[in-house]
Amino acid sequence: MNDLLNVVLARIYIVGVITVAGLAFLIFYALRDPLSKVPGPWYTKWTSVVIKDHWLKGNRASYQHSLH
Image (cartoon, rainbow, N blue to C red):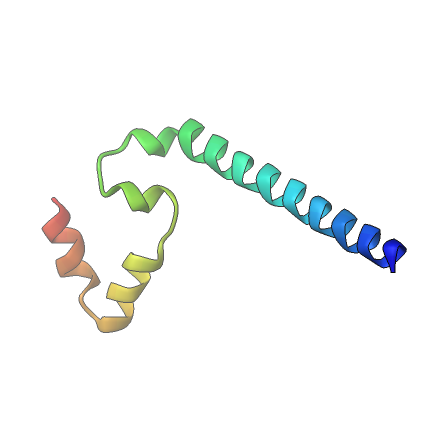
């Protein structure tokens, strides 16, 4: 039973390290990207879900125009 617990804890540790490294990479990339200096909503550095949602609704052009 103790060996199983060690295996589970080791896997949780590995997943945690990979997750933290991935988040650090994403944050570093988002802050160093030349386009990060372009004005706009803060969340556009991290995701394009909002613009895709407006595209699916058919009002992407008016949404982008409202940002200007």
